[in-house]
Length: 548
Image 1 (cartoon, one colour):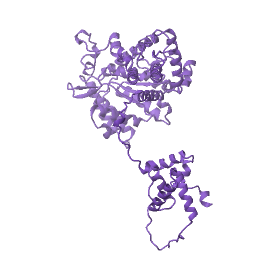
Image 2 (spheres, one colour):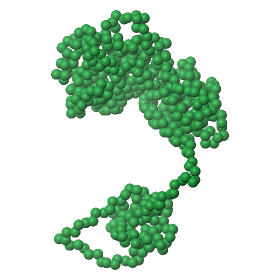
Image 3 (cartoon, one colour):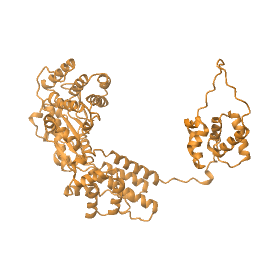
Image 4 (cartoon, helix red, strand yellow):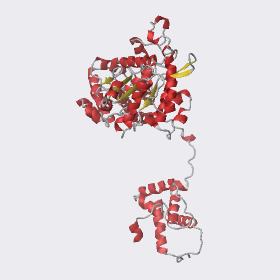
């Protein structure tokens, strides 16, 4: 991404602006394609690896990224958004100094609109809207990482320039929470203590927002990205309106470019007021629809299809392309995960059964995997097939699918990893069975719950074991309890006097592991866990049983 700057024409509005000159050069289309492409590592010999290793190789597909036309459009807009925002904040002129003076005035008055020097604002806003899984967040992050996050300056002013910062919209639409997140992220980058100084929940919103604007100006923030803006739809009260008003002020008053990213659920929110719609359209908003089954989609599938870790490669046919589109409906995230899971399934099947050495990827396999893995997303897929925009607004989160894929690969890796067997002669002697393992401890606890002292319970248990060898712990408790009922009370209980001060012996706490033993013992004996816990004194009987 490095080029000879002497070969580049110099734009007059970018001349002598160190905030812009220290940025990477503006990329041409071939350079953007080359720098944005991220292909997984793949070697032909890896096809012959054991199944559990190939499961790990398959997870490389999660990093597969091929820039398409829409990604190139987004790169151009982000590049212009950052640089145009710096035009009005040139540190070599009075622009940047005047902005710092205005920030000082705002902090004193706790008023975001307070100014001393009128300054020109060249910042604008931008919105990226698209259904979940279309690749918005991944694309934005891929482009942002073409730029350094922090640049150190010594001249004409000494500061740490923060080129971009990405935050997630608070679920409750809270301006205060957004400010706190901002301070924490800035502290991570700059090793400062802004969160401790300005991020206390005791501070008012007015105080927080002016300090957030001041910190952003002081470190020449080039772009603030707010992801998951659809969270504002669920926000109650005036929180979402306050947050939108604050974002507008960052652009129009402070001069910091703001980019918002969200699903179609945020469209009514952004179009509810002309001011928000105009701010979001500063450089022309992008609406990313799902991919059509066209040449662009086929190009994406063709490049992805090269990355197979099956024993033998499966040629890509038109029927396979068609089933991939049918089951993913043009959603990039879905088709990549479907491709990963299909390979995982056929590798698992071959490792377990050993029947299909070829490990072929078939139409039936893709349909079966989609029906099983995308079960939670069936309503979303149906809405995509019917092009029902209203229904799509309800599905703005694919994290359950991410969790499913992660769990599937973890389970497969553990299941397919061979366990080396030790020689019989080297096996250690088995440890002696402890009282907790043979159930004796659970029986003793149960007898103590019936009111017996531990030493007496131990004697009765030993006697019962000698008379009835092989009985389960639950049967032992029942046998001992029956003997106690036949014997009857040996001593008449004496009611203690009121004036008699006798220290009560605290009840012995029951170990949770013993409770597990009691319940498992009861279930193995065909009884309920409740009856066993009741006999052990771990739970109290219902009130009607006590009254009886």
